Image 1 (spheres, helix red, strand yellow):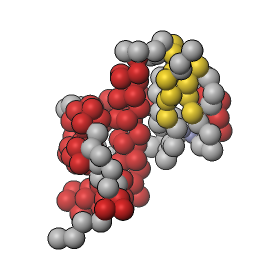
Image 2 (tube, rainbow, N blue to C red):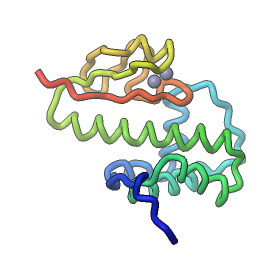
Image 3 (cartoon, helix red, strand yellow):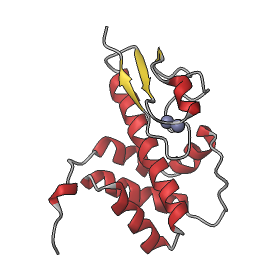
Image 4 (cartoon, helix red, strand yellow):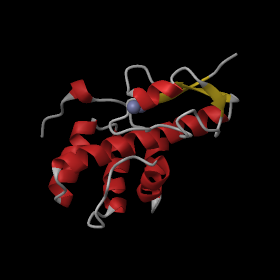
Length: 153
Ligand SMILES: [Zn+2]
Ligand SMILES: [Zn+2]
């Protein structure tokens, strides 16, 4: 096996732990209120386990998507959506969790995302409070590229 070091990133055990919680992905999909209709056919916990393992080793998103397609037989567009959603959600939750211990507010960085996310861009709210779109954290849209930044005064 050859290792492609150009894709290598350090692992993210904090996000891995968040994503490994049973029911996490289902609850996240419901809470983030995105326009994505899921058939009852996917085992979301299985997808989340693959995402979690990806965080553990710092795998590139494209690798995790491939794994979900190959191992679970999920069509690629759905795998792309679900893996991107799961990655964005877990890392946002980890950022909120970690930063919340040291700062009071988080700023939504939504530069270049969509019209919904633009409403939140640059807004600073108390940790755990809602941004203008009604979301507490990204993702706020399909293929959201937003993140939260700690506000250091
Ligand atoms: Zn967006
Ligand atoms: Zn976004």
